Image (cartoon, rainbow, N blue to C red; front, top):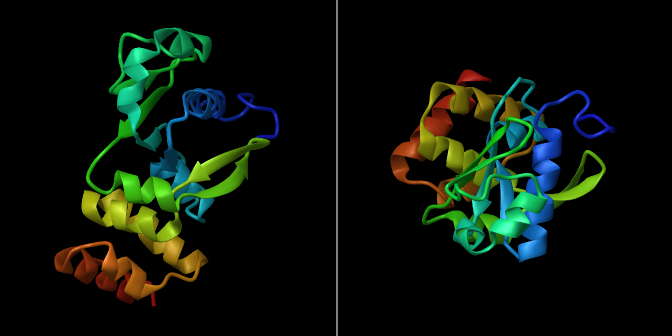
Length: 169
């Protein structure tokens, strides 16, 4: 990511604004999706910015949303003044993902990102071809503990993970 926020990558400023908003409101979050996959070694372009956490808090803070350049009329997705949409993800795994998120530096700011095994598990649950490719690239770049992945997905998803591992050998 660029050292000068917003100059090269269109989602840098919306990411920084979202992180600022969540920190101001005390909302736990984790960066997920394509940007997280890029951080962990997947070379790809994405126009998506996605975060996981307790986003229901946003509805009670329209002024804070405006101050961070988001449209306060929508709290299931963030619409940034710069034209970037930020997907907000909350499911039965979100609390654990947020709790295990790791702090990294992106664009000169500390940002919480989904731990690599959680990101892989989320991508296995999504089951899309692009997610399988993201997983294969992450596994090529980083040591991934199969037992941890297995503990975070169901048997069918873990079998697909093993197939992905086999394809890249």
